[in-house]
Image (cartoon, rainbow, N blue to C red; front, side):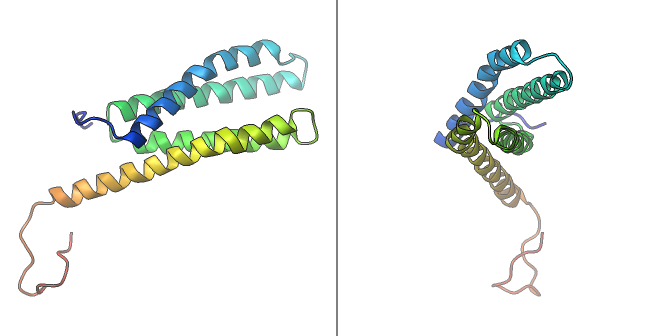
Length: 158
């Protein structure tokens, strides 16, 4: 595991930290509400377990991702990708399962105004983290310079 860096977080990273930490905190009362409000009768009891379990997993993914980003761990990119994927999946199932019901409008608004923009933000940050990591690897590559065979305009093979 790499040591956390001391440089301040950039604006995009701060936005990711706010979104992931806030998402994890907001999901706590939501999970409690779902657990208490969804019916226990079969097959709805299975839905309660599925929804509550999924939202617990999403909340944990967001919390772990916030910690990974805050401490600048290498696993931050994985956490960002997992969280983004879980959010997109959540939006998909919310929209599909509410289609034709009174909750359809709220599911669409939630998906397009909140969940998908957050998922895109997290995916873009994952891409940036991976690009920064690649750049760091290229800059830290220590070895002999290009051989005379490579010539002046040819890149040094890694």
